[in-house]
Length: 220
Image (cartoon, rainbow, N blue to C red; front, side):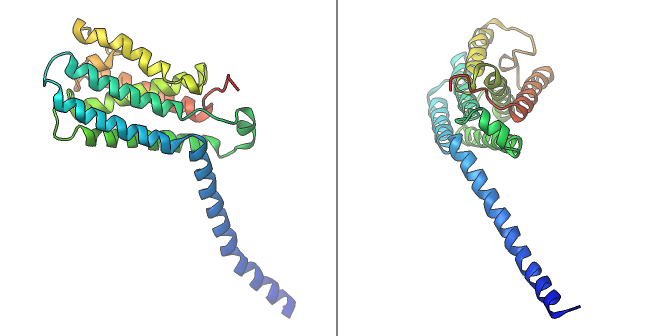
């Protein structure tokens, strides 16, 4: 082995940590740019506002009755609609072609924002008389968010709110009609297994669709 070979090997070993740090910083920059392009910070601010609105509403609402269920459901559907809109891409088709990490970023953002919404709304309803409790909150929020994720690739990311809010319009009459279909999960008791399965399947389907396809950008 020559002196030149030793020097070359030393330079390769010293540059390996530098390349690793560079990839890490590039990954952080990619995540930051994706979050900025999807208005994640704005979404979190709106979710905090939803949690505050839920806590305020629960303070004044009666413990039983239709309004005790309708208003929290409306806030939950609004939170899901905001999460769905964040899947909207400002770049359209070029991003789909060039972004090989795009599906992973979509999945991570969808799961993170849904978890943040659940945590914030649960915190907002803590020590209050939320109909259905945390279990019902988890089921209903997951179902509404899944509908938003399914709507985005069909109607466009900017119109992802149509899914959860449209479904809310169907659900509200069911609260007073004593309907028993499991696919109307917000109208069912929190321990209803069929309703939980339906909401879970909708969320899983929406998560899969938004991860693979993202939101459709028709209006750009």
